[in-house]
Amino acid sequence: MRRTSRRLADGREIIYFDDTPGTPERVAVDTRDLPEQAPHSEVRRDPLTNEWVGIAAHRQTRTYKPPADLCPLCPSSPGRPTEVPESSYDVVVFENRFPSFAESVPDVPSTVDGMPMVARAPGRGRCEVVCFTSDHNSSFGALTPHRVRTVVDVWADRTEAFAKLPGVEQVFPFENRGEEIGVTLSHPHGQIYGYPFVTPKTSRMLEVAGQYLAAHGTHVLGDVLAAERAAGSRVVASSDHWTAFVPSAARWPVEVHVVPHRQVPDLPALSEVERDDFAVIYLEVLRRLDGLYNKPLPYIAAWHQAPVRTGRDLAWLHLEVFSVLRTADKLKYLAGSESGMAVWINDTAPEQVAERLRAI
Ligand SMILES: [Zn+2]
Image (cartoon, rainbow, N blue to C red; front, side, top):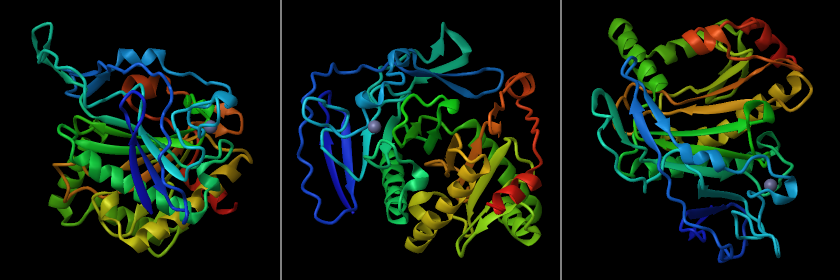
């Protein structure tokens, strides 16, 4: 894989990851007259829960569902410059033009209105867009295993690079797919967030893993993995190095966790063979998910990685894929119980979902 770092007209970094032999050098210049962005995001800590919230009011003006011929993620063509100056690409990554977190945000006072219980900090981090293919009408599930392997290497590269940035505490690669999820651009792409704090979900999982380790001497996810593989009723796919299963207490109407058999903290720690094997099992999972309602399933795919500086021996890398679609045409809304109390009520039985996914 060849890696080429360039700059866009407003100074943002763009990195081409080429996996096709003989690809010409990436030298195209961004000809657009782009104003430099001055993101003003900040984070504030909710004094009642100690959870950080990002406040990025500048994002309200971002691009919303442009027509396909104006897609900013397609390669550039004569007279039609996009976010990617080249006329084609394999996988490309660039800094988000409307980031939730950025390295350049200005300092802010350390509290909100002098209230000592409400901590406040600059939203200092990084947000990148990852385009999986230059083909506007493709999807992650339609990629070749070779290309998925490239994407895994890109996620690992970016995780290592983000971890070196001052202030980044956790790196989160994810994909939102489908209008039902609120995706504003249909071009196959994901994002990577570098947060200036450890996320609430990860903090909680590390706390639980620590308690479980103290009580049992083993890792909770390792024990779950062994038990799911033994029971088999919720397993959707498995390979030498990974198992995909519907979690026994699934929150979402469709939810699959893809877990490596070896405890590793993050994507960079995966071996070559584990990366190759992930490409095969994940494509199988996506094929089954799209077969569930015989239409492209809207989903969120979320990588759980160890924080950059803490809990690295307790974390266990895994991918959680889930959908808001509870039937072919009905959405699960996060209503009172979910939004108000963070208590999920799932209308589908995990075992039945797994059985249906296995039959596809
Ligand atoms: Zn496009």
